[in-house]
Length: 150
Image (cartoon, rainbow, N blue to C red; front, side, top):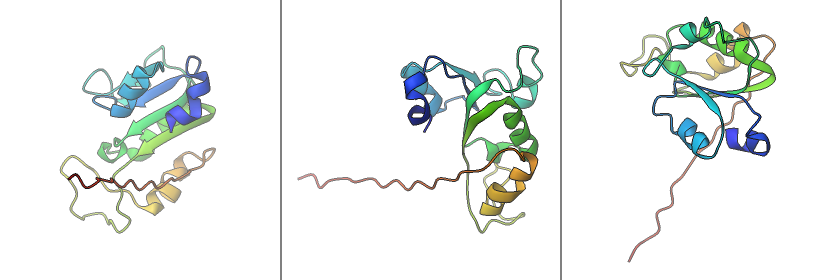
């Protein structure tokens, strides 16, 4: 999605990868020549710390990607607010997350997660914290085709 949205202007677009440690999307975009700022608590900062740096300014990124990070963030509403603060007007935040629409607080989840996301989380709860933004949800189902090898 990042490539499709920005391939014609890859040298001028400013991208931030949240949770960039071992993020294959960020790695692939760098190999394609995109300039990406990468943050991750394993390599440098968490978002809460990063946003307080004197060099970090409001509305400074065209695209922010967060690949399967938000479910690990305890205060996800603040996380979304901080990302909205960093996005330029008209910018795009691209997220993937662990999703299970029948999830209820207290259900079993992986030890490293704080929650699974539901349609209500994505369409209502998180958007209440970023009123000048809209959510576009794209469901992509990938199927692998393995030909018969004889």
